Length: 141
Image (cartoon, rainbow, N blue to C red; front, side, top):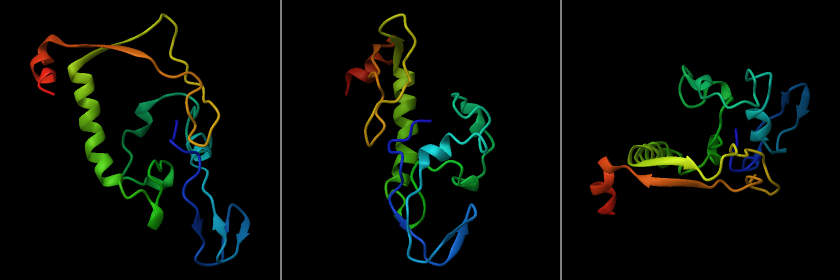
């Protein structure tokens, strides 16, 4: 829902083609708006709502190019393989080792701010407490 940047790295069409009814000549610089793809109601049911279950059953990493967090093609992110292996481990460790809660009673503000990398309008603040079962493991780091 919130890509790090709204536009992918520029691409260039290698041959004449038609995209959504537009003639695109060979050599045209193309900018893919990943934010628009991720929020397209023609691709996603309730595209503006956080529904992680929508990704259950997706085949492969590209599945119709609806979900492109790392771009695609020759200009895709070179760190995709590393990220796909390390991020789940890091997130799992954070969930397993800490109890998390909001700082205040208000819900987390998910609105977007202004900027090239789509920062949050209000920074996320949370409190964490080491779980007793993980205190030995966390203290070694």
